[in-house]
Length: 280
Ligand code: NAP
Image 1 (cartoon, rainbow, N blue to C red):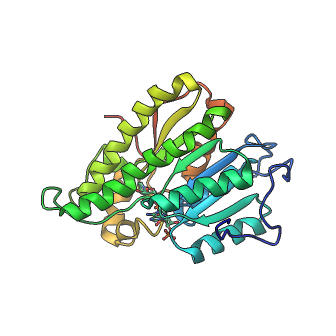
Image 2: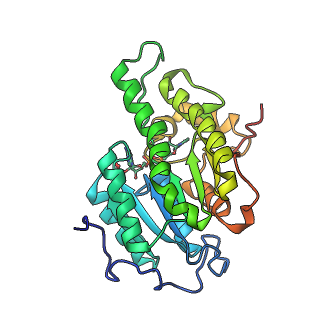
């Protein structure tokens, strides 16, 4: 039996039911550069993941969005469907094996295959000292941020192999410039850089590319603790070369590009979207 999926007034999308011409968020006709492709985006009912899902769909892909809470999935799917986009949603807590299995099964059942995986779901506990962190918190953060993208990719691989797909992981500039208060989160986001490069090596012969988005401070609920603090905000604006906090949409076009044929010879790369040069 199929799990509950968010359906709009159009019902579930069908691989053949698509818009031939779509508008990108820049307003430019891109004639569906991702047309006929299927994308699974985790942690995509708000923030960066939502903006990525929207952009992939605007660029022609069928997109399966997901997150932990049914009401968030329903709300986000309905919003994107109202915009005429080919989007469906299902609950998936990426740290739960049964949820990942259901996500894969549902995407295959309804879309017939999977081309792109974008792993956006992440947990950020302000745990402070890495060495003072309990084993339980270590497990939670590493399970969601590091293990789950690897396990989900393993599950999807047999289907992506047939379609020469692309994977995008989502790290953080905390991987390059760790902050004391983020503790184990820094470690997990640094691990994602390795999780990009190693599978990129392994999957290159199969024509599957693996790249990594590395956001700086982007205005979402997740980073409220940073951009909600006026004095920190002032400091950040001075520190950032672009002198503004990023918006989720700043990240979305990069991921669409990484999925597109325009990036067909790019793999194993980390691309910072941070408002400053992250080069050491
Ligand atoms: P956000 O606005 O808080 O959105 C997080 C999304 O992920 C929501 O849709 C949430 O929905 C879902 N989610 C949370 N935990 C999940 C889980 N265990 N399984 C599945 N879905 C889950 O966060 P964001 O700022 O867009 O962050 C997205 C990613 O970007 C994270 O990996 C984060 O580390 C990274 N990042 C963010 C920033 C920043 O400044 N915002 C900077 C660097 C990196 P539910 O509550 O329904 O699950």
